[in-house]
Amino acid sequence: MTPHMHLHILASGSKGNATVVEGPTGSVLIDDGLSRRELMRRADGLGVDMDRVECVVVTHEHADHVSGLSVFCNHYDGRLVATAGTAGGRSYLTALPFELVGADDEFEAGGMRIRTFPTFHDVADPFGLRFDCGSDADVDAIGYCTDTGMLGERAFDLLRGVRILALESNHDARMLATGPYPAYLKERVGGNHGHLSNDQAADALRTLVGPDTETVVAMHLSQENNRPSVAVRTLASAVGAEADNDTFTEARTPDGRLTICAAGQDKPMTIW
Image (cartoon, rainbow, N blue to C red; front, side):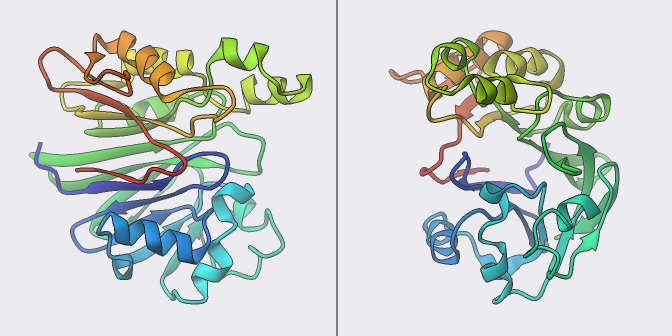
């Protein structure tokens, strides 16, 4: 599979989320929970040309995914895409000119085919994404899924076998159970409309990883109830990967074909 797309994770976590998928003719910004200054600073640090962004996709209306959107749009006149539930989820979002899609839909941007699938979170109508690019004989694919308490049938269908899989691995179940969160928050995070645990993500990898999968990125790690090494170790065990550094923050299968790593709140990264 020839890489036709690149994934630039500018921030992933409860304090702000923003990711750029770079396609052959343009880029897509997924969510914007950062200030414009911070968004542009992180993009510049990765060499990401934000002038190529021709579409902003909002997965859901929680503040850590949309708090920077209004200011960003003061300097942006491209497409905004969300579900009707998301577009109406906050008062300041209702003023933005969203193009409405369903949580089981498809559209094109940046030379990429983009398909949505429903996620399960405590918001109006959230979704995850699959990006495809290339010819029938050489299709590149990226899957993106965070902020969901479980994976549905369409999610499994669309995320299976992608080259780059950015999948939520929010918390370690033991750390959540014994951690400082109050009982109601523990129940919310660990529930079916909360966030995927490391174990849930690892179980999903046994189905989702295929022969073309090169990189799995653990996303939206909780700073209180997880650690990069804990998440990577758990995911690695599901696919036979082994530590690739002393801190177990990256793992690789013995044949070198699959890498497991973790995105961070303050450590932007690019997956080629």
